[in-house]
Length: 134
Image (cartoon, rainbow, N blue to C red):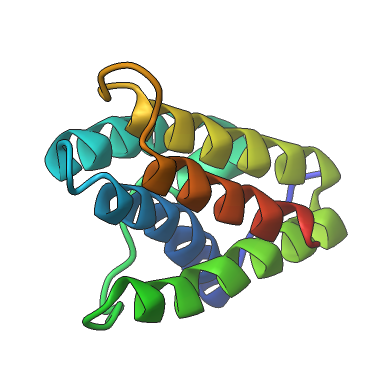
């Protein structure tokens, strides 16, 4: 059975996944925010399946706000909503989405020297909690 996402569903997935990379980039600003964002973005554009098609482009027209808190107010609920949406429409794709976001988060921390900073580790934890809240 082939599943097709409508434009709003695709936008929700994009805001969630690309926003998670933006949150990790903001949390990694003390190191290299650019590298964190680049590594996370590569992970998203490397996704396959329905999720890969949805995440092939960053969301357009999204205003993330001026603070990380405003960004998190949009992204964390979108992560949960994306998981709920995919579990209802395509269970295997929900697992694919979760794995893709987790890989993007891990990739964003990859270029840190040593262990991820406490700030990045905490942001990663918040993203995982939002994914698992569905």
